[in-house]
Amino acid sequence: AQTVTQSQPEMSVQEAETVTLSCTYDTSESDYYLFWYKQPPSRQMILVIRQEAYKQQNATENRFSVNFQKAAKSFSLKISDSQLGDAAMYFCAYCVGASGTYKYIFGTGTRLKVLA
Amino acid sequence: DAGITQSPRHKVTETGTPVTLRCHQTENHRYMYWYRQDPGHGLRLIHYSYGVKDTDKGEVSDGYSVSRSKTEDFLLTLESATSSQTSVYFCAISGGLRTSKNSGANVLTFGAGSRLTVL
Image (cartoon, rainbow over all chains, first blue to last red; front, side, top):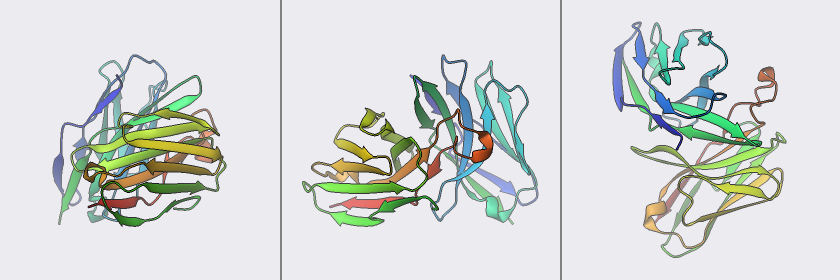
């Protein structure tokens, strides 16, 4: 079964500091995609960053970067220079497609608190 | 959100009544999904569709059915609502992972969510 595990239900970080959120996944596939989504109190799901499994280079989007370890099936999110607006639930997700059917599987989420 | 709308946004109903949630998209995306979000469980896939009249079950499909008679609409039906189905329901759409990365279609785009309370 394809699973995504986020072992940190809650994390805190001081404003302007760096925090890393963990994510591991389980799959037998070699071609897949990984995502981090952010859900602020507004409840809207927002894409933070995306990683294609065939790419060895870690994805980066401004203050957000990932550490993708394919052999270890690990996909952590690093937030640098944390801001108050980064406070949200963060979900790791995995997607694989077989015969044109794509399923996106999500982890249980990590709630990030940013302390002023 | 732009291109995807859910209705109703809020609904309170009683146990045993049927409920239908509607997801409407204007992006002409092939893939549509229904998730439920519950504290401690994250987002769990209920059903998804990979084309008109093509649907499949997700991890928590019991008690739910879906229909997709046209590209833009994906309906989620609770035939006989139970209190355990009280949740926030999200619809999401995707053009599939093989579309151009620059188009943004190869990621999951979510609706604003529908809060359902079953008394």
